Amino acid sequence: MNEEPRRWAEKFWARDPEYQSDEKWYEAVLAAEEAKRKPSTQSSEEVAEAAGEAPFDIHITDEEPEEPEQATIGVKEPEFEDDFSLSGTYELSEINGCPTLTIRSKRLISGQLPDNQAIHFTISGNVGIFEYNPTHDYFESSLDNPINCLVRELSFQLLERSQESQANWPITRIETELRRRYFSDTLLDVDSLALQASAFLEEIRDFLGTTLPNMAPINDALFNENDRDIIRTRLLIEGQASEKRVNEIITTGQFPRYLNLDFLPRAIMLWPEIILDGNFLDVAYSTVNKNIRPSALEQVVGSIRDVVWLCEQASIPGMSRQQWREQLARAIASLHLLQLWRA
Image 1 (cartoon, rainbow, N blue to C red):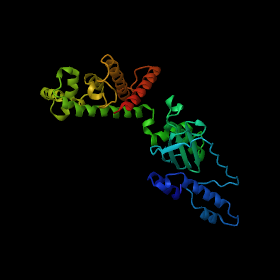
Image 2 (cartoon, rainbow, N blue to C red):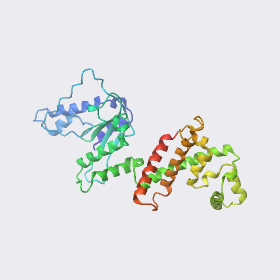
Image 3 (cartoon, helix red, strand yellow):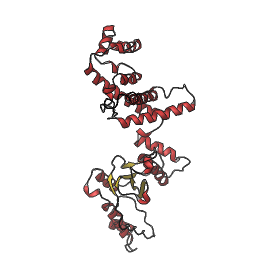
């Protein structure tokens, strides 16, 4: 990728007003087309100088450019906003001859895309525009999302422009590598999911660790001997595992950082108001009818149990392959649900 495209991309991501609209990009294409029409006596260097360096590679052919489609009378032009989370440069250097693609992502905010599609992807040279409609029926009625769509489009384009065969680099492999490098939180292998699950549970643990001390003294009768053994074992590392110290850790609300993650479902059942009602999870509890509270709480606690399983037991054999896949699917759904509930 030459320096000029990089400079244009940097100015676009830096929110330079001159580079935010499509006009400047289109002007570069027109300049290149005008340069093509110069007399054939000019050298290729003179043609390039007349055209100026466009922000992408332009393939010059003898074919006449297609006439732009005329806007339909009475149809409002679609409006977009830039999605900087998906805009950027994408490459996989391990693929032989793989180019660097510069993508500008635009989220539809009014109107519709051509043919009322969920996404619209155009590319010229190594610069592309990825447009998507987040409220399209396709996204509303399925588990697919714009990231998946972009990854699929990029995978095809990278293979098409590389010097590799699909036998060596199937689309599935390219998709996986793109996710690993640019969208690691969308990977669906157990190790990646376990890392996400662990991070979420540690957030809950930290939240309880800073909130429960404000509710001291905590009733130590809520803790069984197994809980005490776990706390005592952790305290051994600190060199002060006396029974008095164990009781102090419990009654002062410091216990979350000493207990295992499988204590979290029980903690939420003991102190639901701390976690729910928009404090950590945006799930109503104290404001709903008392008859509904148990089912609302059980849904949250059940999801937490699934995520604990994903974090600690998903990689441990112990059930049939079919049962494991069903449990994994449920745990993934629970993790995504909890992430959506995060206040």
